[in-house]
Image 1 (cartoon, rainbow, N blue to C red):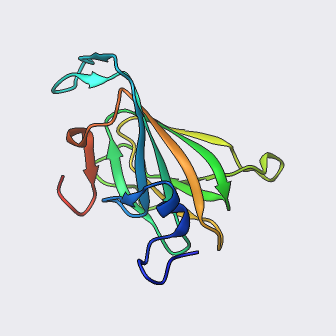
Image 2: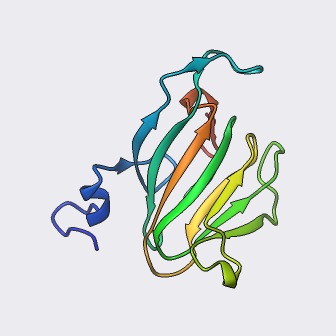
Image 3: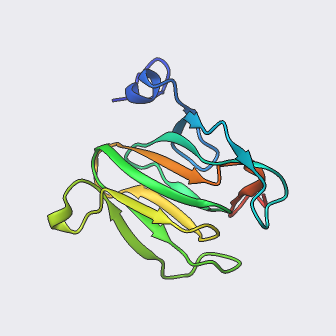
Length: 152
């Protein structure tokens, strides 16, 4: 449900989430205190970091890449389609679709790994909101994030 007064989904408000630049809602939940300089990175990064990420029906996580590996973990709601668009200069026209969700017997996966540098997008696969965690290692830094239409 979404609050008519604020326009913020109830779960996003309960978890203290803010709008995410790629779409949906997020809150940072953890950053490892250890940092290091990974090969090929412009500066030191935390060993890993995590967020809660919420998409409501009609929301889309826009096409983007992250330099680091990103592990998506399903928590509640409906299934989530994660689109993998390859590691080229833009997403492939026919992306691979992996369904994140609790029904393993139906082909859903409770966790999905998106390798660093791979184009990714996500959207609810049904009419329910979806709450996931995203764990990034080495840790997330906006210098390592590229949104398709932003030029970042």
